[in-house]
View (cartoon, rainbow, N blue to C red):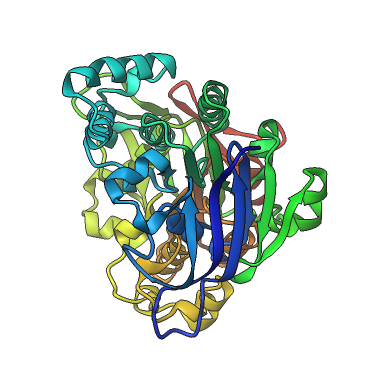
Length: 464
């Protein structure tokens, strides 16, 4: 290994200056040039906060660095002007929508090059060469608004790589990716490492298996960023299995359907070809259904259709009445949703207000009791997801649609969310959750809906 790529020296960080709760406390970390470092740990332990500090986003845009310093490529990051930081370090956010400044990838890449003072006449050729080298030409001119979560994440990696930053920070990069898209993402990184072995990768993840091909340095964090393990071997990570492996608890129901699909075709706006064909499927009280399919296959589109937002042909019957004949507000009384980015749904100024009328015990079971007075936007993305689930549970709808409910969660948090949901299904709540995690579906769902080639099938759990 070469010189120090990133040196974190004795930092203590908190969100409120007078708070007694530190997110990171006397935290130090030395990362060498060319290393791949994978940081694992519980939700809320400070992983994403650390990523934002390393990149200079904190405390410039929030929180208070009480003591310590962070050096990237020999320079204190706080002393590097924001326009120059991308030459040193770039980040891929857990939620890629937070990264984009423009409306499509071509304009985003042009914006990045402009900030790096690349001559205007050179930009187009650089972008075309980059897109060709990394096989992303098909993404260049499609609006971000129509890309799948996996495609957005891939685009955000391209924006991070085009300036050849010395350090790449990846915050839960596989949160919205199916296995095929994940492998494609990793291939981009491998290609980058081949082209420039000095590139340093700092990845935050909950699944160690994603990184075995990189032979990384494994770091496990505990509360307040305490380093529980640094440099252990991959086989020895099983010592910390509580961070990675949820516990199964599936439920079933023999109740009559209250929502049914009959030869339904869901069409994209102003196009004739169906994006999804849904044969005879139904939802019963107490169902826990996992919706599986590749990125961009239509999982979110199905949810929006069930909410009466997207048009369809055929029949969707809710509570004995055709869905299209329901008023939107009546649908919302029966069906709630938590989107991939739950922060778009928050309407209250504090966690407690957002969770009402949920009780304090429910907040505590999700590990959010100590954050009751925080703004929802000060929570980590994993914590925001928990709050989104809590607020929907509190709405007492009959069916909850959860778009990737456990991305950004460690194993205990995943178990907390899924066990609360399965407990509610035992009382009649129905849940459909989309996921790329086959293991999660096998552990918790009593039914599996799978999207293949534009069609939704119900498959036996044992068949996959």
